[in-house]
Length: 87
Image (cartoon, rainbow, N blue to C red; front, top):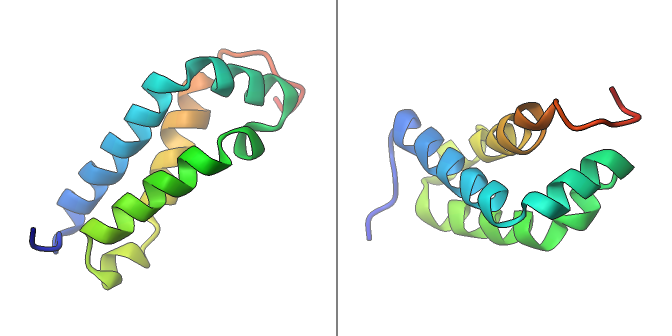
């Protein structure tokens, strides 16, 4: 499979992976936000997603951190309704 070479496709892939993490780990995400341990609780899942993302996009696009931004947008920002001592 050829590497993704466009920013739009790289962003879409990053958001799709982050959305899957959100869908399959809802309870862990809620617990992590409430206890301010989100990234520790989902470390393995996030790193697995990162490895998949890295394997599918060109190195130039990987270095633009679209995956990290998607993680924050989908796992954190979209869950701002969850009570947390952070906000």
